[in-house]
Length: 91
Picture (cartoon, rainbow, N blue to C red):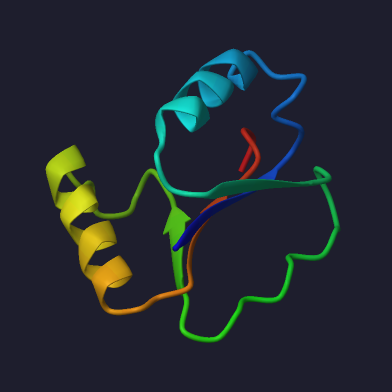
């Protein structure tokens, strides 16, 4: 199962770039990062049998163990990709 981060704005030039790279190295599953421009751009098509998670400060907070359990369930259920959508810092 692929863990795919789709981020609006450039991670590579942000203060979070080093932290992002460090965490991606720790993940045992395949990962992919797609960066979109601050405005516009096209989100890559979502493969069939995939999950999309929109990360938002107003959304439901999950503990690390709870998220890991969901990922394991989706993997065992045969999901091809879990996509995390991250917006720009200014919304």
